[in-house]
Amino acid sequence: MNPTRLPGQKALEIIQRDQQVISPSYPRGYPFVMDHGKGVYVWDVDGNRFLDFAAGIAVNSTGHSHPDVVKAIQDQAEKFIHISSDFYHAKWVELAEYLNRIAPFKEDAVIFQTNSGTESVESALKLARYHTGRSQFISFMGGFHGRTYGAVTLTASKAKYHHGFFPLMNGVTHVPFPDPYRPMLHMLPGEDIGDATIRFIEKVFIHNLPPQDVAGIIIEPIQGEGGYVVPPDTFILQLRELCSRHGILLIADEVQSGVGRTGRWWAIENFGVEPDIVTTAKGIASGMPLGAMIARKSITTWPKGAHGNTYGGNPLACVASLETLRLIENGYMQNAKHVGSSCLDRLAEMQVRHPSIGAVRGMGLMIGIEFVMDRESREPAEKMRDAVVDKAFELGLLTLGCGTSTIRISPPLCITREEIDEGLTILDEAITFAEK
Image (cartoon, rainbow, N blue to C red; front, side, top):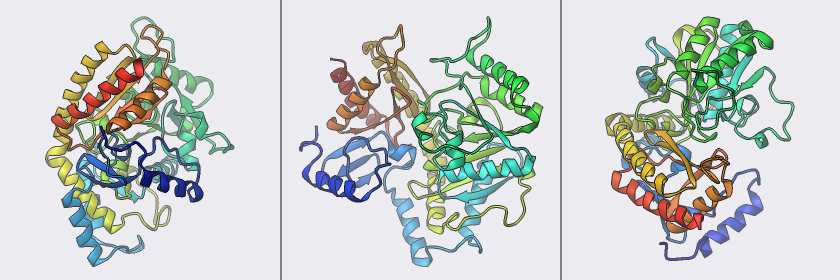
C-alpha cells in the first residue's frame, strides 16, 4: 500500500496546472503524475511506488530508463541530435537493415521511418494506393489504427473517435472482426467465427465493393484498443489467401502487438502468415518517438518525393531502437513468451474464483481480462472494470482498460515471474474489492 493518499499534494498541483493549459482532448484516466521510473517500477511526484502493467501503452518494452538505451541516447546526443531526411546518417541505415532482417516475409524489405504508429499507418495507405492504383480499403470493427484523418477513418474501436470529425477519408469499408467471445456474425454448421468472417467479406465483394478496387486490407493480428482480442487460429491464413486471390495487399498493423510482445517479433508470425506491409511503433524504441512502415521491396514502387517527413529516422530514436531491438532479441522476447504463459496460468486460476472475469486471452505479454455482469449473458461490466483499474492504482499497480470492459496486461518485456505475481496479487485484491 502506498503511504500517502492518492493523488498526493504535488500531484494535485500539477494536475490543476495541466487543466489550465493542456488540451482537454487527451483521454486521462486516474491521477498518476510520474516522477521517474526504473525497470518495471515507477514513482510519482509524491514518492509513491507503482508496478507498471501498462508500459505507456506497450511502449516501454525494455522497462523504464534501461541503462543501455539511456547510454546510447546520451552518446548520440553528444555527436548530433538531428539531421533531416534530406540527408543520410549511419544509424538510420543500420536500423533499417535490422528491420529488414526481422521483417516477417522472405523477400527483402524497404523501410520508411516515422515518428508514430499513426504515421506508419498513413504511410502504408499511401504506398498501397500508389502501388496498386486502387483506392479502397477494408478494416475491422474494433480496430484502432490512429487518430489522423486516414488512420482514424480505419479505426472502429469507439464511435467517439469519429464524432465531430465527419466527413472522414473516403474509401474505407469496415467488417466485423472475428471475436470468438463476442461473435457478430451468424456461423453455419461446422464454421468458426473466422470462417464466417471470410464468408462475409466475400459477400461484401459481391454486393457493394468490387475486390479489384481494393488496395489493401489492414488488420491488427491481435486487436489492441478493441479489447486484446485474438482471432481463431486459421483466420489470418484465410485472409492472406483471400488477399492473394484478389491482388489485395495485406497490411499488418503491429503497432501494439509487434516487436516481441507476443513472444515473437510480430504477432502475425504466430499464425504462420506473411503480410505485404507491416506498420510498427510503440515498443520499437523504449519510449523514444519512432515508428516504421516495413514493406516488401517488390511493392515499394513509388518514386523520390512521393512521401517524406522531417523527423523520421531521428538519430536519438534510431540508437534507442537499435539497443531496444538488441535487448529484445537477446532475452526479452523469450522472456515475454515464458512469463506470459505463467501469467495466463495464474489468471485462469483467478478466473475460477472471480465470477466477474468472463474471458482471459492473449499471447506472450499481450493479455486481456474481460469483465462481465455474469458469464451466461456475457453482458460487459464496464463499471466493474473501471473500479478494478482505480483500486489497483490505489494499491500500487498501473493498468489500462481497452475495449468495453477489458483490462490489458502489457508490462515491460523484462518483467520477471516474481514481478508478474506481485502485480497479479494486487489485481486479485482489486477484483475482490470491486466484486463486493
